[in-house]
Length: 471
Ligand code: UDX
Image 1 (cartoon, rainbow, N blue to C red):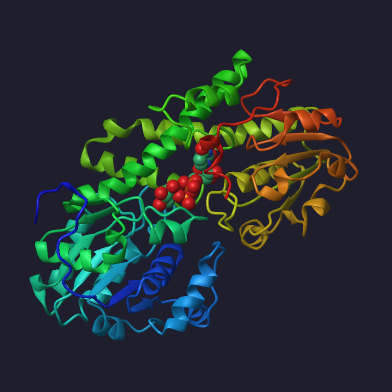
Image 2 (image 1 turned 180 degrees about the vertical axis):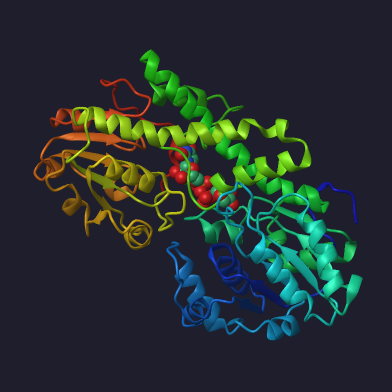
């Protein structure tokens, strides 16, 4: 293995490897599709027949802007196929990317490694020629080394079967861009051959000048959880400041804006509000803290537990604001919840702050109506007891208060006068600092936002405070 250094030029390319991508969820489907568009022959593999059939027929089974067009392009090229057959995958691939999920284990903070172990194991026992297995899933540190032993013991090739790690940093809503033009590549490798194979598998990306870090397995595993921990910490930092603002009368939006102009701090991921959710940040910081405890370095990252608590308190505080607004008791009050997805331009409701707030309002006896432009169906599956409206206007009818919980553009663009025709009381809680407070107040609305005094004015946010939350 070469020195773990940052390079701008890759090692010479050997050939164009054939790729398999095991696990066709969010990460895997995007990776398979984009690699085929980049010119590789790719086989997507999953145990879920319905998912494989949908993708093979040209349907992306989740909402991601731009991905359906890329799937069509990849299928038309003839380079992308999908299968449930692991024998076919083992035979086909030179480089196998494992992209299966590592959800939080029920009743524990640890990551559930069942799917990862099974994917590596199923492939390894079938592979009979020199190949590289590459993990992309987010895993506890030490997994890649454990899996190396596992796959080499299972494979007829023994130590000839190599394993590498290549963490993935894609954001939902920007998945195509982040996959085809990532801001960096990290290869965790154990041999120069593995590094060359990975360089060949990412040749078009490296040729664009994408920075490459070649590292050991442990570092490459740690990069991903460290990146997500940093982002979560930055969001919780500004939300902790919001708590301080709430008791001092300071305005967290003005504070964030002032901080953002310091280039050492920067405004990205400094947007205060209802906090982070989704399938990555919450579970990754919990799994990291759990793993660090196991390794005896728990104290080093114990702040992540506080980051998690600050984040969860934002949800509770949002419910408090809504309760205060409707007179101190939510029972029987009609609350319109705008948004269910964990962020705009996504239909993902995993650990979604918006849906959590809706659930808490419901548990206090409010009549809750939810509307999300893309996530109603997923939200309904998770919380069938809530009422779902088919449009923003239908959602706010007779509302005692409106809560903006996911900052979709359609909610930002709504005219407070139009909404006022439909609601029972003109009261709005802006959980995402996305609405024009002055405009709402001028049109007769009572307007409240987390971390801001009751009479705060609209703030024109610095552009880098806005760009993570709008497309
Ligand atoms: C994240 C990481 O950004 C990505 O690199 C990793 O690969 C997967 O996890 P994603 O889950 O798609 O990506 O969402 P992201 O855009 O990071 O947003 C996470 C959450 O933080 C959202 O709920 C969002 O609303 C919230 N957020 C983001 C804030 O509350 N404030 C901010 O300033 C930015």
